[in-house]
Image (spheres, rainbow, N blue to C red):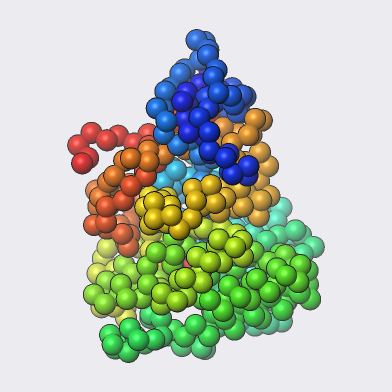
Length: 430
Ligand SMILES: NC(=O)N[C@@H](CC(=O)O)C(=O)O
Ligand SMILES: [Zn+2]
Ligand SMILES: [Zn+2]
């Protein structure tokens, strides 16, 4: 049976339009969008002027499966994604074993086949993500990966990286770089600057990121491969990506919600939930990231959802693992901090979370509300205000940097190919 969603404020992202519309879903596809549709042979839901947006697409998530399923697994990660309004995710390959050949990809496919979420897979660039020998890239492509990355590590050996980019160009695989030159990062734990000095913590200079991005873009230039820069955190990084785009290179970039709304000043309390790689930087860098996002230099907002167990984070700052979880709070954080404050429009924010990632990942019939597209849709209640707490989060780990914050604009329903895959139950919650 189909479904009719009435009275939504429908955001058509590519057109940059928000208008009051009814949307008819038939066989998992958007069948009709018009100001008034009346049908009595389908399920009708009246969403009373809430936002109806395309299902969000996150091209950077760590589901920790296999190997670290005490932090997250494909099922719990998918639940968190759907609760956050996402209908598509790209899984990162820093698992154990890692996908440097097809076997892990087959395991992922099998485990995710009944989950109502478009789960996409990335493979490793190098065997064991060790940076020395190339993975079986042909085999990974055949198994269905859409990208390759050694996320968590930068491929420091230039010859290995060039070779990988040559294969990637021939195989039409996106190369995602975790841009961090390790000898410059030199075991730092937070951004190198005022706060690393005050707090007595080892710093990670911005140069570690900038040098890595520069090298990667140069290799993209000589190989013609598609390069995507993960979790951009510096003003110079934005400048380098802008310059690459100007040259017509196939270079794209993402930024995380937390790099857009938090700075390293937040580390004053030594909260290990705020320890992340790349680290939170100064306000100046943050301003450049927002500007880069608005001007189209940064194409995508991706969460880099990096769950870790509480017992792993509740240790001395230097010993805690890097990473923040964030699928469930991504949209409300950005809506509260950037849209309600008028720093970005809702349409433009969504461009970075739907249409653009769908284009970069070459996903057909996805990313926007259009007749004929899959009915991957999220309903946002722009008035719903909730306090982030461990109890509110459905994912396995609770290392969310916004715990205790009150946020507005939560997803209340996520529809995947016409099926209600998530519905927020508000009883008992403030
Ligand atoms: N971002 C992080 O701080 N950590 C990520 C790895 C990564 O994205 O580089 C993780 O897997 O925990
Ligand atoms: Zn990374
Ligand atoms: Zn990551």
